Image (cartoon, rainbow, N blue to C red; front, side, top):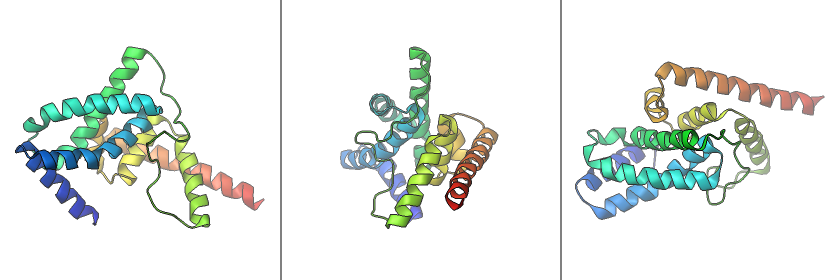
Length: 189
């Protein structure tokens, strides 16, 4: 399925779920649970806390689904609820954001598939570079490139102005590029 047809299908599921279709609701949850988990994990850096925040977010999402005016706005709206839950967790615990765990139990960090050894090596270098980013930059970068949200949707999801999203993306890309170029320079020399 191409990205446009996936978005249309998501909109259909949201609309059907709002109309009371339990099967559509179950499919919507199944489609978005991994995405929301990855987002919470990127923000929190801990798999268990990410699961807890997403579970709490689903309660809020399901309660508010009937009030969502535009089905196309669901992804950004759902990410925003998860982001706010994560922010609330930080305020309540008074803890700093953790660096992401190498591999979170049950939370797929990479896209499925079996890349060639060379691509897998390059991908692992990119993922390592992304893991060094501050959580806000890591989240913006992932929402833009992995979830294919627009800057406006990311602004809603992260509850920040669009200009902040652009700045985070710019800094994240520069840092990742610098880390990757530094790696290739070391290997060449």
